[in-house]
Length: 108
Image 1 (cartoon, rainbow, N blue to C red):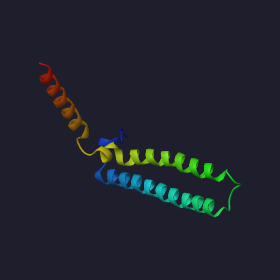
Image 2 (cartoon, helix red, strand yellow; image 1 turned 120 degrees about the vertical axis):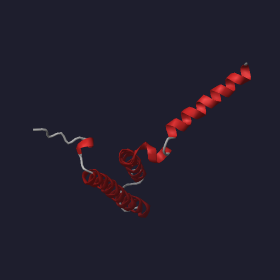
Image 3 (cartoon, rainbow, N blue to C red; image 1 turned 120 degrees about the horizontal axis):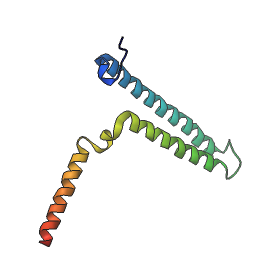
Image 4 (cartoon, one colour; image 1 turned 90 degrees about the horizontal axis):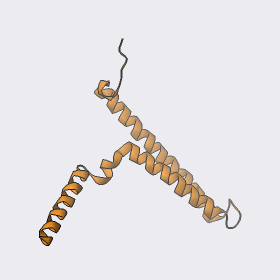
């Protein structure tokens, strides 16, 4: 009995469902990040939470650290192609090859 359910074995519905679940997970992560940090920033601004000089580091480190995690989550969900666009790698390779060819012609 073959129970292989790799990416090529899944139905279009299963693939679409997985993609929707990934997007939903990212958007929940983003929403919670915004809510928590809006509260932290508001709390810091109004001066309710911490002693002098401590709050800014807490808020800043939380924004930075969690922001890095959120960025990695975005890369995992959306992939690098969303950032660089389709065929980015091929275009850059062609660009560098053309530049190298121009440089050769300038020195010959």
